[in-house]
Length: 178
Image (tube, rainbow, N blue to C red):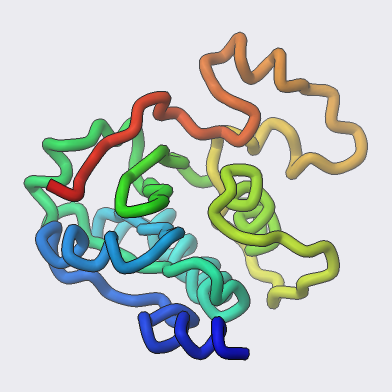
């Protein structure tokens, strides 16, 4: 109970709006785990992902969830290589350690949560229920159908296509704490 309260005091449990790359760089060191939705305003994929991020923020207090308009983050866009928008920046200990990019519109909040858990960004528990709506998982795992029955692809397939098993495209850590 004390840990949950401490997280709430840091802004966990809400889907925070980060107003600039400077604001992001100030916030990042405060959180052991953070997921930042980097988006382009007006893009339907980004709007769909916002819906799921709000649900995840409310359900997973252990992780800080925020959103950042890429147009308001020119310095950060130069510091990291974003393969495709929208992107989820995966942050641990004040550093961007990877990213999940693209959106498969058929996925649900559960699919996004599972993929984030594979990257160690949140504690996924079977049975956690999120309201079902369309949209919001990365294209990297879309071909797997969410990892359900009938999944004929493998981690070897992913490695052959240049992806890790979690769909994270970045092999290098980007230190944004400077």
